[in-house]
Image 1: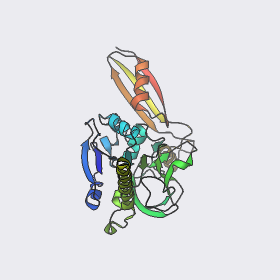
Image 2: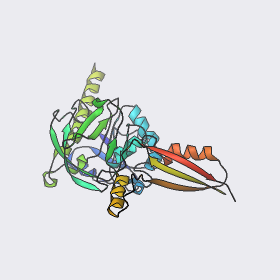
Image 3: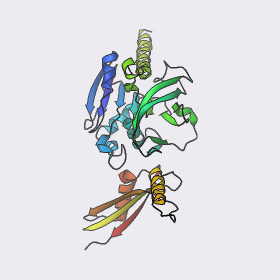
Length: 218
Length: 79
């Protein structure tokens, strides 16, 4: 599995912890590159691209790499946006909705319990529906605003108030979530629930490749 | 040269947590007449040519998020 991590000025790089835990080739792709043709999975990491100036993700949305991200989405490649990466996905129109300031006004950095609403996705196939998982958030503009009534696209919700924590696109290959699964990948961090999301992606990739090989043999 | 002034605000239907916090702050200072505060962005653009329709395009493409925000433009004539 070849994974690209799109790096904007101000992006975080905790996701590289996953590279060392799982057998997945993961490389940096700088925002001014223009092709993602060599990759199977695209990660848009958290952080504060362009210092969150104007609006979170608004300036990153006009980077040179973005047409390649949209093309990858059209081709059915898996795209995961976490935190600021989720904000970028809404700004470029791959996911609906937008973000408001937290109700508390303040930066919020803490563990949250999420309910898995759907496990029939390439990102959540190792979870149980209704399972409570522990994943941390770290955001100021984390109040997701989504006016559509289609609840079937909600993949994760907050156990505390039922708010939307993660949402998928219609084709089921683009997931955005505010909590950071890559910060919950080792017992020493307080939870390993986040690791299962990346293992789900890997499992999905391996089973897809397996069936593709069988198809070629037939 | 001319100037365009752009005001970007959250739609009326959307809760503005900053405005709500500032309303509470003003009440604490004794400004009891305050009913509601909405906080937005003010953007001043200096332009060499172009007109209001160009500024509208700027708002639609970058300055405002159509999902949640409204914008208002004031053009200041060049000197």
